[in-house]
Image (cartoon, rainbow, N blue to C red):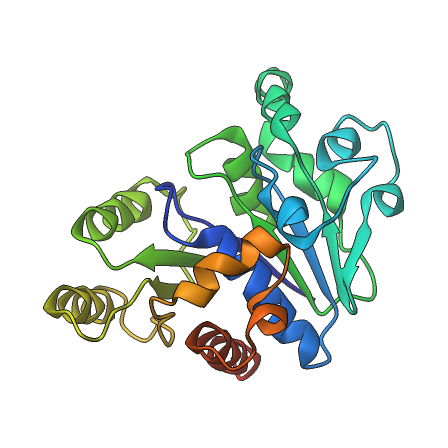
Length: 238
């Protein structure tokens, strides 16, 4: 099982969009997926139309077993939801000596999954420290604007020793603009061999969450669907 953290300390980079649609793309290719929503905004469950009784917070507080907070969202796609109460765990974890080990203790290595994705909050927090400790790979969605490019370099500099970004996923790419092309070139230069195929700007992609659908359900012929298919294929090939 591949454990992957989707991480960027800057909001608005398309992180949750990538988490939901990449996960579904892989599920449609026969992969078994578990998405753990580590963001107190709780967007993953809402997007996929999951109405949970138990959340990731309940698991971290040892109130429920792992299987009791896993919900099937689509065929071969399960989620562990969160909500705004998850932010409360920061205070509790801060008091513990091994505060960065909470994910490892509670999640372990769930059986029967090919991929486990952690959708992380857009901040440097104890939740993210746990994600970095738990994950074996780090994917960073990066939107095509200069502030995002600057922020990505700051993230790299603040990562704990020994932890590196595995893949950079360019998002909101507009091939008509010079800015997008320049930022993509800068990323390719800074992160040699780690930049994936880009996710292009697409109105249909921005709309699908409002209907609690993935892009493959909302408009499977759209550029957003094609781009996430290509991204999934690249990840499956290594």
